[in-house]
Image 1: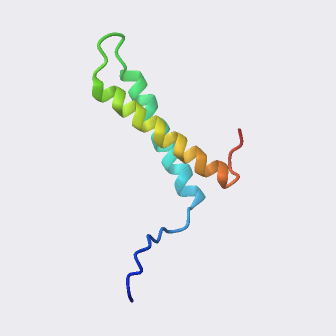
Image 2: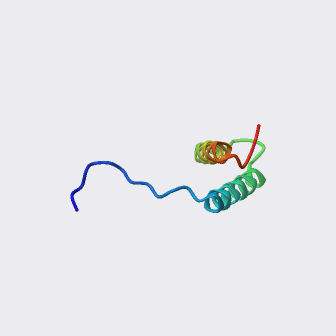
Amino acid sequence: MADDGQVHEKPLDQQEVLQHLKEVEKKLIDLRARWPFHSVQPRMVAEREDLEEERDRLLGILYVLGVVSD
């Protein structure tokens, strides 16, 4: 079979997206529990931003699938 140069993604599985969202939210809760009052390390800020972006991306997918609304 010849490679046509296109990326072939598997269809989105709603349950997988929901499970991944649950894991991301769990990591955010854990990170917030460890968040210091002073002198926050840059890696913690970056981790929070990454997790929040991933959460927003997953919520967007679920919105398109009609699972969540505004």
